[in-house]
Image 1 (spheres, rainbow, N blue to C red):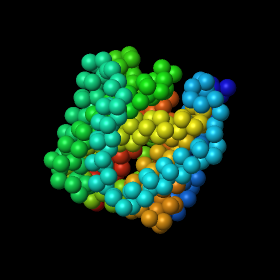
Image 2: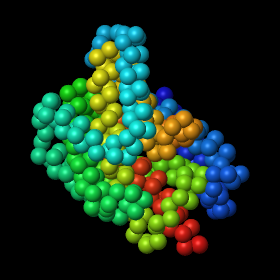
Image 3: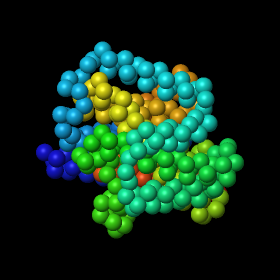
Length: 331
């Protein structure tokens, strides 16, 4: 069954990639172009096919509560949504500064034990994101402050998230794995490349629907590589930290699979909402980005590991920045 799912996804992925690639060659780069609706439809089908392949995480539902307490579970969801979404509107981007604090609190409370290799890996990714953060010219924060924030977000986000995964038993079930720590550098790089390859339709669709038009800053050849900063940092705090934290709360009143699914959905759409101007006018953008972009990355991380998710995220932003580079030069 799983093999058949993969073959179906490969066919849909290939057709979607070819179709969107043809749209790029025809010069469709704005959201009001006639290629937008077919691009949305094709990407939606491709997204559903990918989620169909990844949705079964193979979890043992014996952990957590024996049954889902629907009343309390519903209350937990209302509280999570009622806190997270207004916070984005009321606080805005400075909300990111609270996430390292959350990570530190979790580490103090849980006191997870880490191998030296885990700490070094988290620190290495944090430093890469921090250095790349100096080139993130789309941010209104001072470059130095933004770079330091990336180090804090990645280091605390990864360690606290891994700590929760260990505490809840999800890591033992192979959920949210790290190929570098399990198998070494070569398999990790292969996983990163696999994530890039999978993301082709999403990267092309992003440009076809006008995603590159707002980036007026890429003028140097090296600037698209700055995409590694959001790829690492946003996976660290937006996936590795927040999904396990919500799961930790939800599993008190729900079975493992139900709790994790709710955590993925709420985190995914909240993550998408953070990338909008906020308010009621952002509902369509939130639903579109959450469904087409945030959820696939979440399930890739949970099923195939951190490096695959980072590669997927990196390639989407890299292609967008490359397109912006050529558009800014009038090419």
